[in-house]
Length: 277
Length: 168
Image (cartoon, rainbow over all chains, first blue to last red; front, side, top):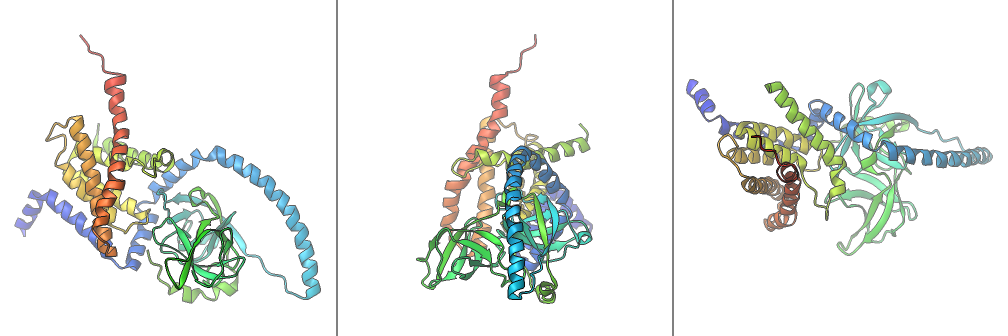
């Protein structure tokens, strides 16, 4: 036994490399579910303070432009609010006339992004709300311009959200104009497209919304705009390449949608889904 | 400088570089090629302290990189620890490295790192080996050269712009 220890000490450089190589290969060859568990654990424990610090510092660099943008948006929002109030009153009156029940709006839980992926292809963010604030798994995360992602892990006061642009994410979306439903995908982590059947109608400029079929996002959340359509590569399917409505590099104040009971009823089935990296 | 201070100094460098990498560096991109400051700091640490810190710090930084990028978990950890191991053999405690040799070693570090990343990627996706050479030529070498320019700035500043005064 002693000679083994002596050998390790004598050849410590080689054994250090061997150790890190074995650990790396174990991580590379691990099942997607295990990889995800390890990733989430490390993101929220060992590496959390580092990314929280980086996120805080990078946040300061955007304060001026952010302030200017928010002021402008406040004016726009107040104007729109007036219009919406008018329309709401009119809507209530018309619904009353038609006998429809009033749609319940989702409660929004305000959260702040406290750590985010510093790379240009960020897949997840850590937000400042957790179990204490009533956040639960698979609740949608939205911003001012539309859907941002979904909560995939909840701690006491923080949560990890998987962004829509995570290459492993599969979100059911639809083209607003033609109501064609497809899956939002990417192959290289940069160009995102909606996979549609070839006969479906999609044109550049069409708005892409969540379809409400995935069981996580409610129907009608803004996702982006179709940039171009490619129907040549596959005889059965076409690709509608989209530009996201949300700027994932500038996420700061967001909202977690507290889902009403009709969504929560599917929780047991959702819990059985394994998210792949 | 005590050991703790030294650790804090290097940790500070890594955090500073991570901040710069995600804020200022994207604005300095030329044809989507960006310098890699984190790799640069890791390289400096490796040639200063040698193999053992190179392997472990490389592994730690690699895992951090893997966690927040779309790459496979363990891919960068493997490449950076191997890079730390190889480049660590050329550390300043053993060899006296002149600037040209350091520059060549930095380029070699990028090539080693990206070759391992691509090999893992090719193995997992059953891709072709030709993509490795294209990637090295189109992405790795320009990235290494661009990083080299950044690495040369403090060197030029100290030796050319403000050369040390000779004291009688």
